[in-house]
Length: 188
Ligand SMILES: [Fe+2]
Ligand SMILES: [Fe+2]
Image (tube, rainbow, N blue to C red):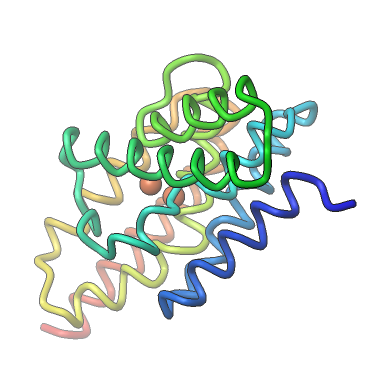
């Protein structure tokens, strides 16, 4: 029998494929990977939250793209929590499990309690591995001002607070900034 995690993995991948956004899937694989690195005894709810934390973007589109606005990010977390909560109900997950996943996903852009913090930091590390290298080239090509891209990178970097995670994310952040700078130089 498939685990809840496997079912969620399939659901998220399928939803992103249907939206034509399969290129985003590695971000979820790496977020789940980093959750396990930062918290080797992470429970299934935390791993499910890691894989599904951005699910609303496959449904509602790119309205959050690049935003550092607190209200926008809060809404993004809440919408994702509702969608994954709805899916978990369809596979008869327990109420307490669903509540925990929703609590984690809703705050993934901010952290908070211990496990929300793990998810927040795993998301940021994964962002610099899987999304920032793309944003550092695609956004300049789309005419996004350099200061705006830089602000997003700095926002993602400062979301990481614990020492261990900071050590992991620092070189990735620096590489992203370097890539961004060279892109604008090339274009200027
Ligand atoms: Fe997110
Ligand atoms: Fe994310």
